[in-house]
Structures are given as structure tokens and as C-alpha cells.
Image 1 (cartoon, helix red, strand yellow):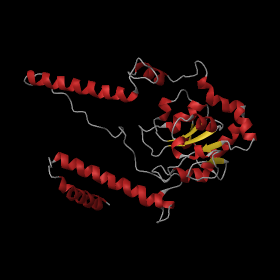
Image 2: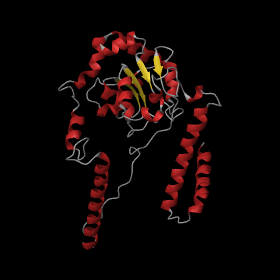
Image 3: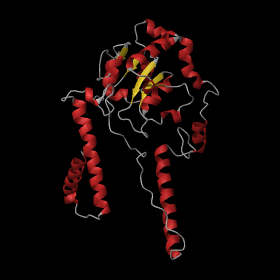
Image 4: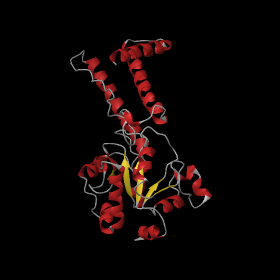
Amino acid sequence: AEKDAWRRKGYAPVLYMQSHCDVPSDRDRYVRELMKYIQVDSYGKCLHNRELPSERLRDTSTATTEDSEFMTFIARYKFHLALENAICDDYMTEKLWRPMHLGAVPVYRGSPAVRDWMPNNLSIILIDDFDSPQELAKYLDFLDKNGEEYMKYLEYKNLGGIKNQFLLENLERREWGVNDMTLPNYLNGFECFICDRENTRVKEEQEHKKSHGKIPAPRPRIAQFKHMGCPMPTPGFGSVEDLSGGDSWKEMWLQDYWQSLDQGEALTAMIHRNESHQGRFWDYMHEIFLKRTRQH
């Protein structure tokens, strides 16, 4: 009811609050298209179309904190566009959690694993579930005009509303906490996790040496792509083929992706060959470049 009152005062149903523009996920391109079909209030530097009510709130640093005035203001909106900087499995940020904390519905694009961590099956709206920005706009408009349907997305806030057993089990099992003086915070908890694993590994190596090979050596732990791996960036709306040759996103992020991939392969090759001369990095880069050129 409170959000509907703000709607009657002229607020849009959808909030966009971004000042970090031109990111790998190309979110502005998608939001720009969405704006053709539904009203979006954009207060940040990206696609800016409305001013925040005070100079203090216009300070970018305020908008990145849990400032009470800022949080109270953005809580007026029914839907918050929550598009991550990059599309990576392990990358979920305050863009997702903040609207949930405030009782708004995130309209999300980001980690493909996001469904696994939601309170229930109806707590966020996933952009990629819709064929186009126009189809998404139709659904948001439907929810905006049908309060009972909209409120279903907030039922998880009621007692017993969290139905996701995977989430509940992980919360119960984790060794760190939030605002819990009996547990370490997540940073200290992660440090302890690393130390525990490393100490276990050292003990296993010692046992292996003492046994003269009878006890097998510990298996190496090698990072997998799912550990902060990010796929090649794609346009926020449309396809790469639709972009002009001078498109700034295309020139920046696609080129950066392939260059970073080459750098990673070059460093891997140096490690495997026991290369000790860092000055040869660019020789390895040239080798990778020639190999990729031949493949294409």
C-alpha cells in the first residue's frame, strides 16, 4: 500500500541506480530498451533521468553504503533493476540483496546460480526468463497493477516463508555469521577455512613422507572455471552481429576478454615449463597469439 501511494505521487514502478556505466554485462543497453516499454526512474550517472531529492544523496559514496536516508528513499520503489557488472557464477552483490532487505523485488541478471540461493521460488524476477525487454515490461506492469500477485514475491519475509532447503542447510552448516558475536564474520571465516585446509594438507604431506610412499600424497587442489570464472561477455540486448564496428562496449570488453584469456594461457605455459625469466612473458603471449590466429 505504501509503495502504491508513492506510485500515485509520480514515482515509476521501477528503479535503476547505477553510476558505473559501460561494464562487461552491458546492462545499460538492456535497460535503455526496457525504458521504451515501462517507466524507469534512473538516479545514477547511467541513463540518468531523475534527480535524487538532496545533494547529500547525490554523493555517489552515499549510494554505495547502507545510509539510512538513502535506503528509506529507494525502498519506495516496487522493483529494483539489479544487473551485475559481470555475469559470473560466484558473483552476487548488494544489487541483489539490498532490494530484498528493503522489501522490494529485484529484477535480476547476473549469476546463473542465483536460483540456488533464493528464499523460495518466487522472490526475484529473472531477466533471462523473458524473451525480450518488452515481455519483461509487460510482466512488471501486470504485477504493478495487481497487488495480490506482487505481494507473492514478498511472502518469504513472513514466518516460515523461506522454503529453500538447500539455503537453510547451508546457513545452518556454515562456520561464519552475520551480526553474530559467537561466530567469525565471513572474511575471517574464509581465512580460517583456508588455514584449516592448508594445515590439513601439510599434515598429509608429512604423513606421506614418513610412510616412504605407503600413504599416498595429497591430491593437488586446482582452481576450476566455476571458481570466479566468467564467460565471454555478450551484449546486454541483441547480438554481437547487431553492433556497429565502433561500438564502445564491443571494442573494450570483447577485446579485453580475449587479451586476458591469452595472458592466462601464457602464464600457465610459463609455469608448466618452469620459466623463471619474467621478461619472456611477451614471448609466450606472442606464441599464444600465433596459435589462436592459426585456429581461426
